[in-house]
Image (tube, rainbow, N blue to C red; front, side, top):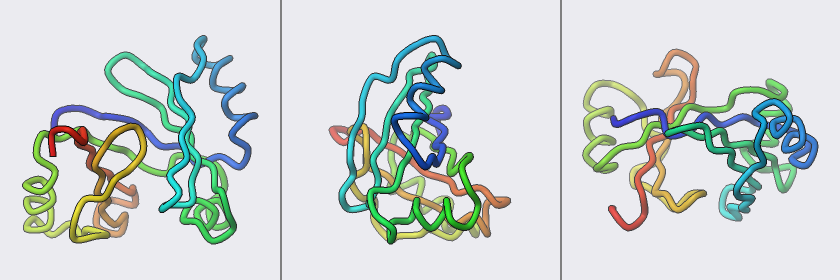
Length: 135
């Protein structure tokens, strides 16, 4: 793993959260993007080499809606940048970490993504990210 790519934070109201984080960080978000397949709208803030990703549900059945219902707003996941997402998925699975899918899928911010179950990662949802053009 190369670095923390981003920290994902689940929010109920993306516009309010954008204003809050803009005030907190002293900068505006650089991108809002909807990932239809995940039922989520995201907003990104740059923080040096890493990012903050705000996640809001676009419908009541999305994973983010379920997370918010169960846990409320807060840290949803930590994402790590990797050079070879498939190799890293294999390495983690062989080490006993439970992947949530067998193959990477397209995610927000121009990335291939793969997630690992929080039950096997000390209660934190882990995401691997690789730039699309590199996969």
